[in-house]
Image (cartoon, rainbow, N blue to C red; front, top):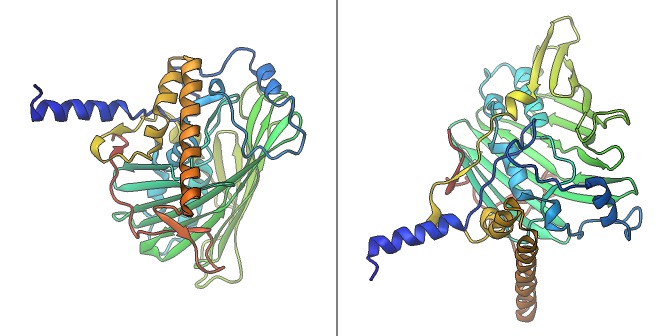
Amino acid sequence: MVSGQGWNEERKQQQQEAVVLTKPLMVEGDSDVDYRTPNLVQRILSLFKNVRPGSDLTGFQLPPSFNYPKSQLQMYGESVYCAGKDMLGECSSSGKGDALERFTRVVGWSISTNRPAIFGVAPYNPVLGETHHVSSRSLNVRLEQVSHHPPATALHATDRIRGIDMLWFHRPIPRFHGTRVEVEVQGKRRLKLVEHGETYVMNSPNLTIKFIPPSVDWTGTVRVSCQETGYEAELNYATSSFLGRWSSSNNSVTGRIYKTAAAASPPSSPPSGDEHDNSVVKIKDQNGGGERVIYNAKEVASRLKAPILKDPQNVLPTESASVWSEVSRAIMSRNWEKAKDAKRAVEEAQRELANARSSRGEIWAPKYFAPSKGDDEPCEYSPLEALVPPAPIVVPS
């Protein structure tokens, strides 16, 4: 006979085992396990032998041997809640009169969210309704897969103590182009610094995956704007050259920060320009005010800790770390047959749910987000709750 306390402990252990949390990606890559398989480039090209150039890869399913043990929802979330340097918190900490300083910090934070990727492995494609909920100190972050065809993700993060409210909408569209895959990342980010009454709107760069030579690079143009101060930024991400380092990202980004004529209350600080040297972004005052670093990859994306499960009983069955737990556990043990079966089980369960909804005439709707009302909204989905509550999964201090 099992006592009530013993049953609770056993159930708690089962709940903890049903959640698999892995270490975030860092600038130096994953130092514990290399998930890449032998003859990587040859194997990747074999996947696309029957795919025509220009084809949309949105519904393309990778075998588990090409998966990093993490969902794309977790990857998006980690760029917000996992950081060696709290650049997001610093955005709201400067004085009320220093609008240019705040804008510069927002630009640096925006760059920091474009974390290095590992060539040859990709996260899982989230299933419809999948969620990810994590807290890092006073910052609470929630994501939900709000669409499956085409795939789209919404993120909402709030921090009452530091006055931060963030909304982030992503719709990646990958296309195959023979020797590379181009991923167009549609969607906007909206960052509110509540105490300063400022809203920053920005887009995301695209992702270019080259097979020869192997590389993963952020590409395209990112624009950041703040209507209240009139400041804007334009950042141009460039891919690595043919002679770039093998199997490594060798990005560069150049750009400028400037003030438009439509500023509500023009600040006195001069506009600035910036330049990026692979892992360090420096900003230089065009009026002779000197140069300083606004982003250092090693400070932001090094020595990161994996989130931990603090409250197993309140983990939703839709949580990414739970949905993909069996697949992740099999990948980490390199049991590819078990990983294949577990991944197929997740996909079949989703098809069964979709068929059941169809038979009942039900239309699926997100749990935490709804389509935005009005054309003036920067993001296509809005949160249903003003504040994100503390999460059962936390980032250790």
